[in-house]
Length: 119
Image (cartoon, rainbow, N blue to C red; front, side):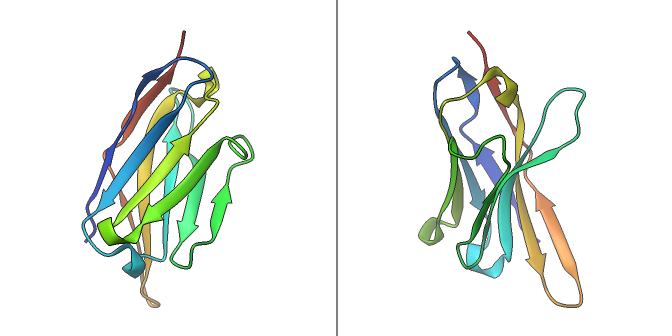
């Protein structure tokens, strides 16, 4: 079992920045992949960015060049730095941890943090 606690959401003006944090209850090196997803009202949850155990990253086209995912392994925390925010980035952002144990895979979610981009 992995508990994930997100923080850092809030209200920001267009063009502004926010940094989201996701603290995991276990070593992030035991997790194959961690990531951020988001869900806007009336829309499906979508991938924002992921980072693997080996440090490889992946981004949705809509956030490339604006968002950066990173990790602090000493504190078992993954971050999402969001710059040049747009109103369309408004959503609930969820942290995800994906564990691959070979015969079984497990996906864990945080409770979500609201990001609102508005003037």
